[in-house]
Length: 90
Image 1 (cartoon, one colour):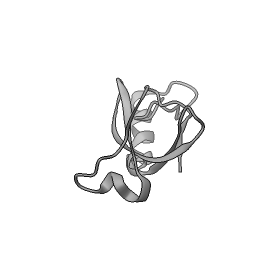
Image 2: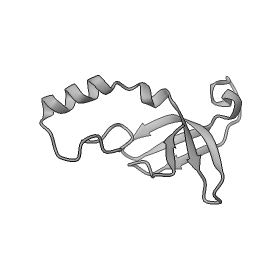
Image 3: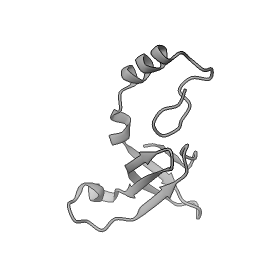
Image 4: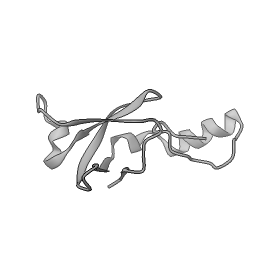
């Protein structure tokens, strides 16, 4: 079973009801968490998730809370689904 970012939650398949219960217990609060994104040059940026779906995940740079500022011009990064290991919880 996988979460909304495509990360593995259980190694083996589980039944529908068990999966729903596990995801309900986990909640979706992790989507609001801050993450670190390691870029190709090895540098890291703090980011927040802007969009998540099976077509990919978009994160936005969040230095000093910029992702929350209305009208702020922030860098956006499009990631594959499931998210790569370069995106990790902060």
